[in-house]
Amino acid sequence: MNVILFGPPGAGKGTQAERLVSTFGFEHLSSGDVLRAERKSGTALGAKVAGYMDSGALVPDDIIIEVILARVLKASAEKRSVLLDGFPRTLVQARKLDEALAKAGTAVDVVLSLVVPDGLIVERITGRRISPSGKVYHVKYNPPKVPGVCDETGEKLVQRPDDTEAVVKQRLDAYHAQTEVLESYYCAKGVLKQVDGTQDIEVVARQMSDLVRAFAR
Image (cartoon, rainbow, N blue to C red; front, top):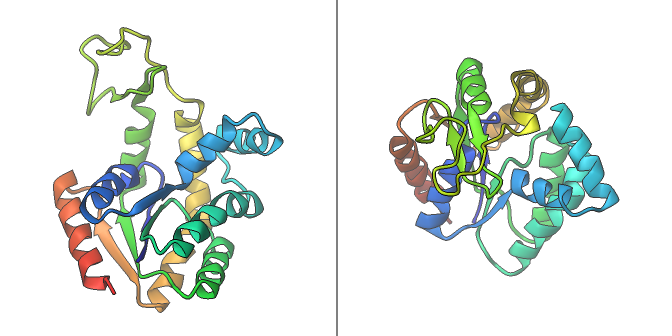
């Protein structure tokens, strides 16, 4: 089974992906994680990825397709169910994915679209703080006991370069300009299902799980 988790940056895709993976045993292919890993690789491709991510621009299709499609096809070849988180983001990516899956004898089964207003997205992302060891906090929703300090390690918390308000707004503009057209694309295929991402996390998780079960082959 192939499931796409879709929505603007900061909509909660990562949180919901964890629950779907736990419930259904999907192989989780997060574009954000894959791209950040490439960014840290020290390669020329990683340097290009870093430049786009830090500026708030979407990574170009040719780069993201190269990095992610290989992993998708490997999972399909091994008959493993896949949860795609943050890919595809453009029609070009969606069509390339469909072509690749069709050649592998499979297809996208359901697209789960998280819907969250822009104002809430900005608040969610700009409030994130991260420790050097990777522990994530939020100044409003999950604050550390001591402001600016990790509870577990005592390390100073930082804001990622791509979590500033200016960068977040650029990312949202890019999302609305390029990615929202995917809703029409997948709606025409009869696989798009929208979920209100402002609801309680567990409510969203339950609704998504019910939708996956309904579309399971």
